[in-house]
Length: 130
Length: 231
Image 1 (cartoon, rainbow over the protein chains, first blue to last red):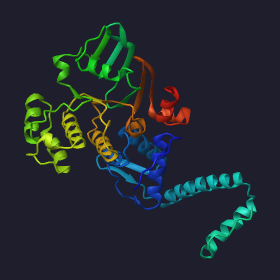
Image 2 (cartoon, each protein chain N blue to C red):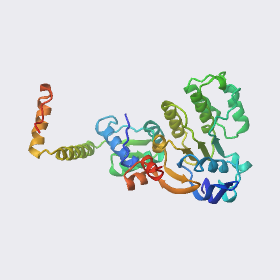
Image 3 (cartoon, rainbow over the protein chains, first blue to last red):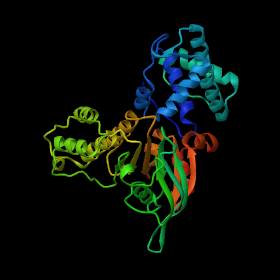
Image 4 (cartoon, one colour):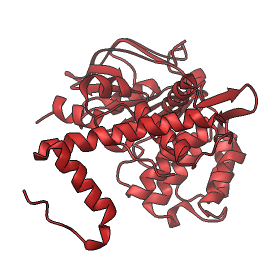
């Protein structure tokens, strides 16, 4: 897993997002045991307390659960993972829509541009006709 | 109990104040960045905690004690300049640390050295600057200390060596010990820290958690530092 951090948000919230992506994309499959806090912190290059905090928040949300001696595991609840996936997708869409609106596009134009891009990728780059 | 505590700590060099009314506390389990521009008093504070300097006034306590023989046993110090005897081989250095420090975890040190492919017979003086820094850090982090004082551990080494040093600090994390890292290379260390102490002209100007700064200011510690210490 590749960890990347931006400057404008707390590190623990970014960890939460990235672990969620790992769970949703199957990097951490349902029911699988997560590496220890120390190993995850070393891998991500972050403070172990910050990693601990992120995992506790994920635990509170139910995406991971801990078993007293065995460690932390990814939930087996597929519906919950699906909900997390939707949540992440909505964030991407909101960011995208905001950027497009900022460029001056209307909703219909955005939708048709999206259709073009996803349906006719082979026709190379079509001018946006601004 | 705080691992390191300063109360109204002052240190003058002649008439020039190096530290002025410094009060702070570092709790176990925390990795704290001591951040400030050159000449702000970082090294002076670390040397006071280590008993290499004595306060002009005020108090500094390590594990509740004044720096001295008892605190040397629980403080592991990485000086700014490489201080390991260069004529020694790695094996001799391991013996040396084992003789000096009751809390030296030789197994841990050997494992980390082996991981870097450093041979026991290799002499320190034959090593590059980066390798010497790594070896010295391995020695310092291999002690089961209560307080690690790391003075500029990533100054003057390449980015890959920096990453190695920082991951070694994380990998040796102990919830009962505290780590104090002095540096001005903030963007490199910021993710590793719980807390930061900004020090300027001998005074503490800010003590806060990294995520609190990011949450409240919407900027990284590095960006905040550049703003506070703008020349």
